[in-house]
Length: 291
Ligand code: ADP
Ligand code: ZN
Picture: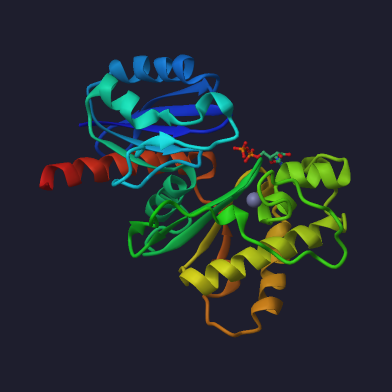
């Protein structure tokens, strides 16, 4: 059995095919340009394999509501060429296989809970802090979706007392993404996040925002683990700072696992998303067989 996965990101699409144990046989990275150009290359890649199902984790926002006329579309993304694009419909007509469809971060949560840092747990939140901030979750073994999908990066957080940055989210200004994403750090300090020294005072502020987010995810979802990925989280010294800030904020109000096992770096690194897409393909095939 051969399965296919697409991690559709704003910069690149990672495509992979795997065997039935989800070992990756081949992968290809395709730059994200226009739908016609990028998706043609994606389709050409998968046509070379007898895939039985495809799992897609996409940048968004996307329509995941099965009752909606625009199910399977990328919707109001700031990437103009991809606005209102019928992604699943296009793949389905070209490849004629069942397609699992979710957000890139939900796919990463699925990857991490199956093979990564949260392996063996029933629930986890995955949050990426990179060009944007996004989060997905697995709850009792299921991807968290409702009318739409969670947008955990756009939480409202309290401005830190030493921060006066107005935020750069085009929708909400000083939401979590607007204050704490890589580009927000760069705009505020006029310096790339990757160039800030470990001792820089700003990291305490970054940790405060991320701790506020962890507190909210904890209070709403009570996950067994919160896994962080994304470029900014390569600053490993952030983890103890986030745990300390979280501990002060939550004030022992709710029980969680020991913090070094609760607020953790991702286990699969850059593979979390694509692995999750392959798991989604497998789940979609199983569901299709039993229906
Ligand atoms: P994307 O979110 O586009 O998928 P990344 O997760 O790599 O990609 O995030 C890119 C962002 O992360 C950029 O804003 C970059 O400045 C920041 N970044 C990348 N590497 C580091 C690092 N080592 N330390 C801090 N910030 C980083
Ligand atoms: Zn926002």
